[in-house]
Image 1 (cartoon, rainbow over the protein chains, first blue to last red):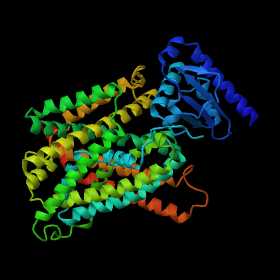
Image 2: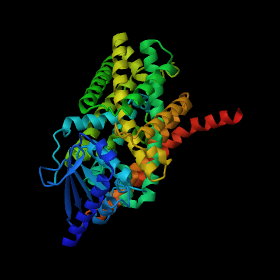
Image 3: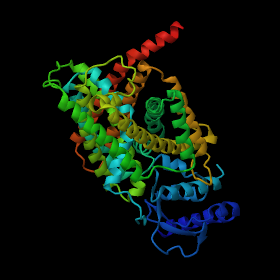
Amino acid sequence: MSTAQTELDEAVAVFLGAYRARPALVAQQAGWSPTIALRATDTGASARVRFADGRPQPDADAGPPTLVVSSDQRTLEEVLRLRLGPNEPYLFGELTVQGPEADFVRLDYIATELCPL
Amino acid sequence: MTPHEPERPGPVALLAVGCGTAIASVCALGLVQIQRTLSGAWGVAAVVTAGALCLVLARAFSRLTHVVPSGAGLPAFLSRAFGRRVGLRLALPYLLLMIALAGVETRIVGVLLARALGIPAGCGAAAFLLVAWAVCRRGIRPGYRVQFAATAVLMVLLGVLAAMSLLRAPAGALAGAAAPSPAAFLAAVGQAFFLFMGFELLTSHVEVAGSSRPIGRALRHTVWILILFYGLLAAGFAVEPARPDRADWLTPQVGMAEAAGGAPAAVAVIVACLLASYTSFAGALLALSRLVQVLAGQGVFPRPLARVDPRRLVPARALDALTLAGALAAAAIDGRAATLAVLGAAAAAATLVYAGVLWARERPPFREDGRSRGAGLAAAALAVVLLALGAGALWEALPPAARILEVVHAR
């Protein structure tokens, strides 16, 4: 459990690092302030990221999530480490989302922009 | 973890979505076609039989949504049960036929606008497509309240007109028809699946509904409402005097309105149909564009279609491509024979997908531990019945298609 949690946290850090390295992409998300929860259905590992005006915030635990993204640990890590676009597991039912469609579409857009595939 | 979502759709909004995606102007044409295969109450019986089978399907979809609460819907369910390749192959014909149906709906809207405004039908159809495309491209989608209003007005109006037709009809007009052959009845049941096609798109709202429970309830209630509505409408059309060579064959609901309530009723039905067509069309265009975008990301369609407009967050190029495909379909599906062939093919595609759904429900990850073997066998038998019904609907649609091929060949 602790290993899975550590690996998920590391994968989240990779994603946020890549996002922060694209100032134009961050600026494009101005006005977007969701709290996104990630949940690994097979290991129980989870993570939260809060955005304020498009910028990731350090106080991730504040408030309930607006969007919950669930998948198995491997798929979540693959997406967060930018080895896999989120569209693919979503289309095939391996990644599910709970929350406003607009938030997921925006998250999907960001991930697709960051994903080199 | 449950997301905080202040604007979850309520039970009424979900019912409006379920009914709104299933009911389009083209459904009236489907009902009249069923009445041409079977007369009187037999047409109503065919609609009710298809509806009863859809109630079983609603339970299966409910289970699928509970296990995989995905807005991707059919491709997600079928891929999880059968693997990616088979899942996509099962879902794609259904999605492609939805584009063909969008073309037919566009032609119908053109005819409705021609009657309302006196403009050429082609111009009306083109204007409808352009407006829907422009609004969708700006990321504006019909809200739950608009969908509810449009669907409710159309259903109440057509329901009242059908009831008036029944009240005016001579005694025995509905019950006096001769019994059809079993093959004709089963083919008509297959055709009737076309009427319910789209009710399952309700499952894509599970992401905003908060859980799968309200979706399961709405699926069952939607099918019940559709059975009552289509049953009443089928009865209304059954007692109408047969007018096979009418110029307005694409819009039989307007003819029924004129007969029951004169010109004011016809105008009211035209306005209600236009509203319902728009909300149904725009909703389908946005949902399908998202799917085309995702499939383009997988290389199923050209990769540029996967691009998302960063400002509006809509798959703009997928929307462009779908609108163009809809326009081409509207131009190509010309005449009664081609239109009815599309309706028959759509019914067959629907039954294929629905059979797949019944089968998927009995496979991992959807099958519960300890589920009886009998339930699995019953589902398999029902899936075979659905495939046979779809084949019957396709068979009914083939003669006109064959005639088209003959005409093309002769040219």
